[in-house]
Image 1 (cartoon, rainbow, N blue to C red):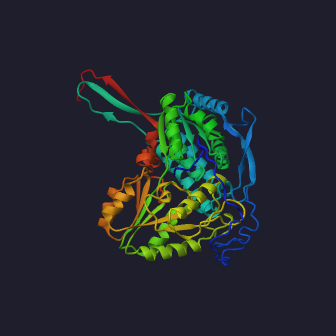
Image 2: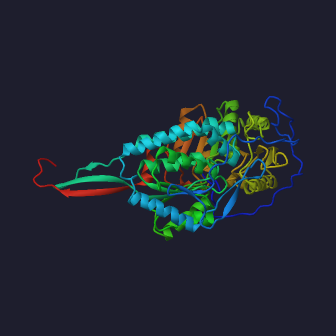
Image 3: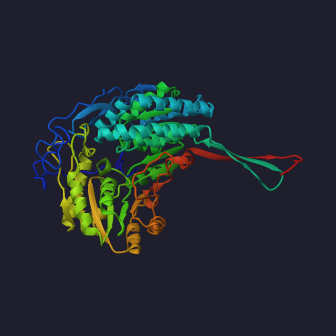
Length: 539
């Protein structure tokens, strides 16, 4: 899920608006959602924060089966986006820590038991891990929400079950990876071997830390590789907890190493390391370019990239407007809008446009914003001050470009990184809010006249990650789904992420695919073995 500004090798400085800036809209307290939960209210919007039901147990790197301090002794703070307060101080990795982790992974691959285990034995360890995830679901969900700001109900009821399911899926693949016997001209026996690629470097984002951990670690382990994983500096806590559970499941030392740290130091060191055989990255397109360059300039290691998106969500003239509004709302606002494939360009046919605008505005005004640990909250804070400030700057750009601000547009409350659900109408394709990946709760609604026009406009972007189509006409759905240059098309649904469904982008949205059988290709080498045949009975 991409353009997460994760572990970014780039940095930006943006000016924050004053906490005293008046809100544009106030709808009062929502009486059915519990104390401290509000709909568009700035009056003590978060009162007091709930203490998450989990202890911080792991803040060091995991290298060669041991939790260790950074080689430099440095730590960095990880913050609670509800308040901006420090949750914990975590080991700050740099090139020396990456060197130690890569050395452990290399030794585990070259000399350790992991690649020499039967595939069935490897699958059993992954299945035991999934069972431990189920056992510790509450702690993992609490850490995920505390560190990232996403609603606890989303973490516990959706993401943790998916996390465990992904590892069970890949465990099932472990003993089904095999080569082929290939017929050839002449007296030769030809077979292909599918071999693990070696030491895999992996850099994961902050918007879905556990899910991205599974998307990368699962296939790499199923194929018999060893791993050095760098978590996002904003959300390091759940990767360390999950790595500890893998130890309990029986994963040998050195097979999975986790280093916390910043992109320019730890991330760059991993991408350019001469003893890393493959690098997988999820994050912004800008950072993906740097990863690709570092990989090329070092040992030309294999690269997969899952990057940014500006996905069209197309509402056709025959749509049930009420259902289309709800799905478009979900497509954009899910996870605080911090989703690489968010339906962030909502194209609506001119015949239903005005009705759609009024209902989209009304739905945004009903969206419940508050402490993610409070029941009924739909939207928590953005990840950090940088993302918060960037989103508000894009909102300002939309206003200055003469898009119509239907609702929202300001910070929510007086502390933390909360932003009002925001809806723009009368958006034009050349506006920044229609071109750039905002990665926040900002819905841009554009008008179109016919299918040929919307195809051309939807494809006029550097991105190609995903698209949504809402129509009752199967011919329209087929025409659009084949014409849109994207890696995923959801018809009358959105964000369906089954373990078996591949995910990745066209154009500058990435290289390669994650999930499903396609993800295994990222972590395998294909070797052809040719042997002469003497007096064969058949060829």
